[in-house]
Length: 333
Image 1 (cartoon, rainbow, N blue to C red):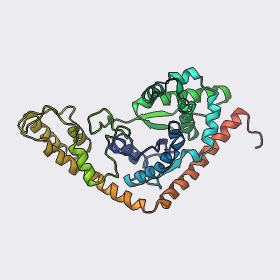
Image 2: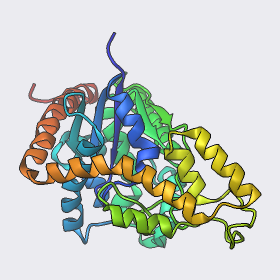
Image 3: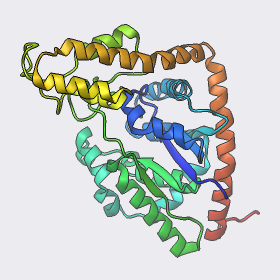
Image 4: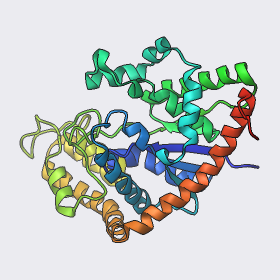
């Protein structure tokens, strides 16, 4: 049986952090052994709100590749690609633009929320407003069966399948529905206790962080503001240190014992933070060391991306040819 096709990826606007590890990277590591997995560096999408800073996008293409390889994604199992180097994707996007109304784009809840967060109002760049169509082109070009997403991205998959249905109705059966693969793990909060670990909020721990940086970040973590003295009873719920221990400490019995003692009183914040520092350093240290080794030969790393992009383009060429034949615009075949 043919393997399921997975398409996933990231915008190159910064390095990856522990929130990505919990939310998507652990899934990708598992899926690469079970599926035909494509990991896209979505640089064209990143430019929809970074058009005035292309150097930021360019520099972070390498940073993402270093993170991918350092955490264990294997180029023998996973195909890495850079979005802008596959011309079939923007060509499909142009054709799909004719299948979606402006009103439908404006109703997309994900886009509406992002526009509000960025304060665009009526001055939203056209590229940003239409990026769900570009995203649909990415998914459909690879004929992806599964697309790992967070719950906030479910409207994107819904719109992708609407576009597939409209295309098939107009021109004939070319595209199939993609299915969202929603992570079973919740979002990892930032070290400040905010709902989401985020590059833009400056509350993240990165794979490239030094041991000292990790220690400093953990010591700043939000715990229980009412737990002032060691003898005080502490609250575990909403305590970021315990949230991280639940996520990353493999010895669950020890974590449960620490929670019990913390609730009773007699356990200080510094002690639980020291345990978390050890847990995170044991996870991040080998990733950081591998990342540093890989960074010494950026040409080799980018060579992996170039090779993957060429392979990925073969798949998109085939899909585009099918789509153009269905649309009767394959004039010179």
